[in-house]
Length: 142
Image 1 (cartoon, one colour):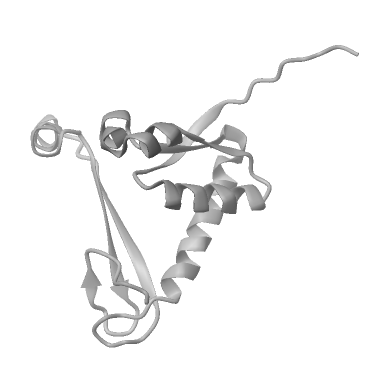
Image 2 (cartoon, rainbow, N blue to C red):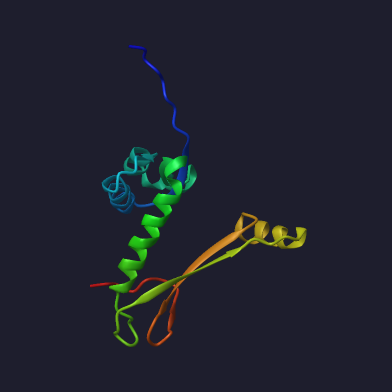
């Protein structure tokens, strides 16, 4: 029987600065049958101050499984957000609003590079489905 070496093209699906959330997400994907790995997990556990320097813990999946992994993560986030109560009206049900600022002009890219250290920016906020309040961070769920 011939031994064949198969290589898998991995892509970074998400980065984490917390090994707890990284492991929960990785385990959820593995339970769904998606092979995934955490790169630089041990480095961040041993010295958390290195997290920013190395880009955090990287959750990597096979390129072929990327779309399925993204869909599973989005479905899990929607289910999680539906169970969180709004701190203002106390009703459950939040939605995530993501914004990517990717300017096309040289000046827009330069402004982002100077202000944020990168040419494009990403932000995520949460809105209550009932009272429409907008929150920069998730409220505590307990």
